[in-house]
Image (cartoon, rainbow, N blue to C red):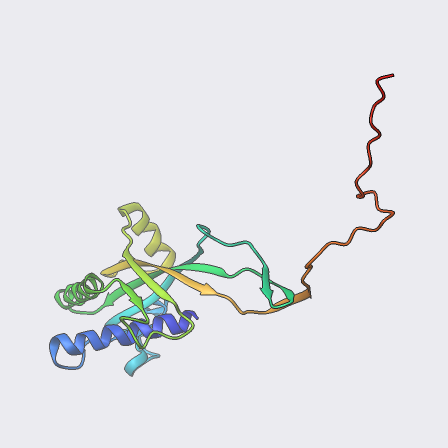
Amino acid sequence: MLYETLNFLKKEYNNYIRIKTQSDPVYPLVLGNIAQHETSKNNEVGENSLNNGLILSIINIEEEHAGKNMNNLIRSKNQVLYKNPAIHLNLYLLFSANIDNYNEALKQLSWVIKFFQAQHVFSHQNSPSLPPELNILYFKLHPINFEQAFNFWGALGGKYIPSVLYKVRMLTVDQEVIKGDTSLIKEVVVSPNSDLQPTKKTPKSFF
């Protein structure tokens, strides 16, 4: 689910650059953990290199509680099926221009912003290559202040790299695992000796 989302986004962005520039991207978007860019300088080469490139990383994952359906019952013909409710997730995605040439790094971030300005909603109608397990994705620029940026890059263990953060909502995780089932109750039969039987009231005598 997570990989499918990021891999789809990577392909969409790189294809967008090809259309706009009429050539292959000089700095194609790659998936990677930006926190490891210092240690990977001498270990990774080619397409998966985190050195001197545009990197897409997951920074945070949160559960979306708004509108969450806690109902774990599914009616199917003459049965009631029990399953855990689906989980809806929001992702925080960081686009980092880890490029030696600062001017070029800013240009690459500009392309990322243009990409989402042109299309911030991805569905099966406007993006046929969207994986079938994904329904619809909404992207929104997520600003952070100076203090948050300082703590953020400090937690990543490195110096600040020109970057932009986007929030994407929402991914639905639903394994469709049935936990149990029971027959559907169609009518209630009351026993003659049941306490639920209506009681007959004796009319009051006025004499």
